[in-house]
Image (cartoon, rainbow, N blue to C red; front, side, top):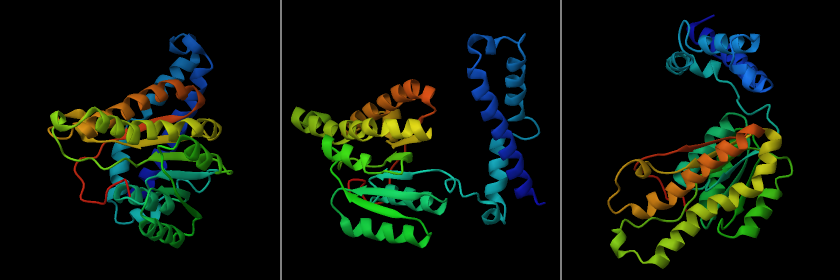
Length: 268
């Protein structure tokens, strides 16, 4: 067994143990935090294994840098029921997400706003991985149409990705009218909520994941990027609230904040 396979085996076993103990701990409430009880000690031991003799993150680095990395790749989603629903899957970042999900064994539903040619090209790439794919033209600001699109995924959803958003003109906020700012919020923050809300029952059933692509501008002082940081900041605030509320159902919610990109606009 090479280093990569050994690291993959250790990482899998460690994380499987930790997830099992984490769930068991929830059964004990406050008692799970008292070392007098065996479950609290098991929890502490399980946490230690994530850093003992090489952390889980170190294992990931070893696997990624190994020459035989391809041989140890795991089809993360092949055993999951349902599809990955990627809003904005025809854009640059969205298309990359779609390709990776398909490569890792997931069937795909992707949405696009206007560029059918780009959506068809991405869908064709998905079929090369032997996965099922469906592309939908969808305006995420349309509440009823978005809810209908989500409900049509009869097989369920295991992953929901929001990689959409309107075009963001680089302008000083002093030159942006209130109506323009309202439209940006509608096209981004409200679009995110329109997408997530009808998907929650499906994600609870699958104990799935929500990932929102936001912007690094929410972490710095943006000049002429206030339209982006304001709307995406609202998306991140909603994501934090959903993470706190939906965690009890096994739903995970995270944001990924890229910096400048030369790819096509997510609004495609």
